[in-house]
Image 1 (cartoon, rainbow, N blue to C red):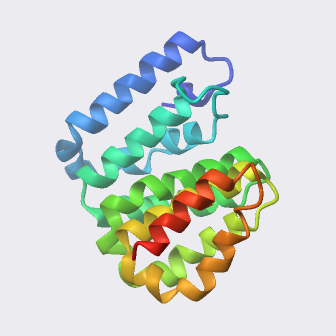
Image 2 (cartoon, rainbow, N blue to C red):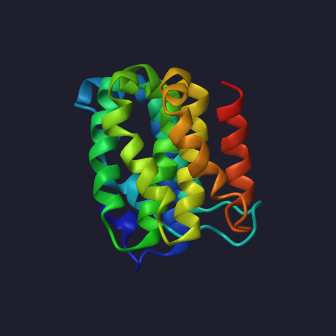
Length: 196
């Protein structure tokens, strides 16, 4: 899998490997559980989430395929095998100077929360909210958008945790509304929070 993150890899090979990896994750996930969750802790997926977003919303991109893999893994495998590896990699990527890495980490959290919500519920205050807070305070708008997306997922799948943090979370989300770069995601996250 080291080839997948190489800058020298041609686009066709990357696309082939990406789709092969997604197929394996989607169709053989339960068989891979017995293999020490190698597929979950494989950094390739998370490295690819940090690739730049395409300019057009309808364009497919490696980062979007990688997020589909994270989503499939989180809903197909036991959360106890997914979240510890995911949390470690998210923390690693959140500490990087590259905003694409921080964006990818938060988007991975946002798509994984559905599958791991019951597992992380008791730990959301210590394990998840600090990541969201950091993302919402980031200077890069793409990172703030990713944090808003993750916050919306938490509001949807961890309603009790979001309700407990309502008085803190609401102003953080409202602060993102005036910025045209984050307005859409802020409104979506606010909608999820207000539905609780």
